[in-house]
Image (cartoon, rainbow, N blue to C red; front, side, top):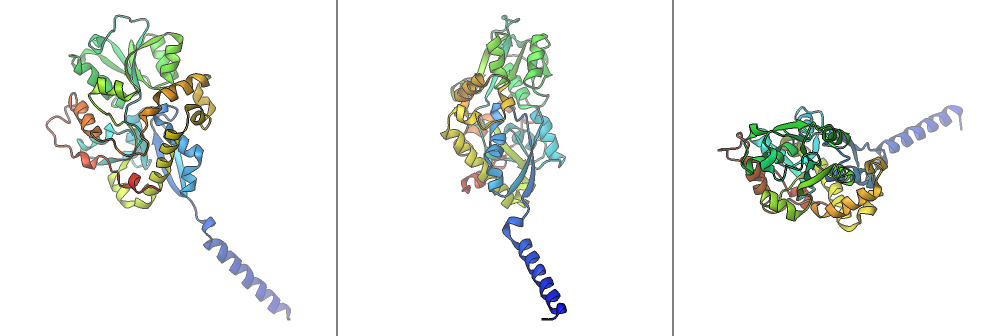
Length: 337
């Protein structure tokens, strides 16, 4: 065989191998999706980081970038600006945004209770109910956030006007704790593990507990769907395959939470989430695990409760017709593998 023929055959073989490599399934790039989480160290938003840790995004061929934003309202703004494709935040934003002419829908409903607690500083034992909020500074994660919505509702429900108190954006975790220690806030709404940290030191006590279904119904009058994955409706319609893969991954996580102990779940989470107290983290998780839906489906009657709560104090919603069927969809969770 001539040298020219050998070189020609070698080149053809190289080209064939290259073509096969390019066409192989393993060479396909994962689909990139960016999701903003309203504080992914909060236990209420645990499904986001847990799904990543369990490898469920990768199993679906997704390259999901989780971005942290302490206040849900800021995460919402990032999505509306097109910086991210989805938000892990409270479902109530979907209703609030429709009143402003923007259509956003919950794709996977993570929880059926807010997982929030109104804490009162030990320095202010005179606060015995939301009726005592008059003249007080109340901590919320951010202005326009779900903690702000719930705080305003509880105050109005107990006879106050919105101008009778001041909502102070203090985030969660260390910044919330510092604000209470420095008496910048006399009470405030927060989640685990911040709740356990303040109760353990005796610096705060529980005024209203919405970590359980019973406590939520007592405070808000019904099931209150809270943590969810929500996305702009237009984006969902244009990327149904990607959204289905996200739903597949998250529904697997909901089932994992439903079938594992707090300790087993905690072992999958970053150690810095324990804030130096793994025992307290696990205890809080075991106590609040029932707030998570087992399958990602919107709880029956939940959207109506949220609309009733928001309508009590939000002028933008009063007198408006809100189509609740456009604020969530069960299509993808029902089709999940």
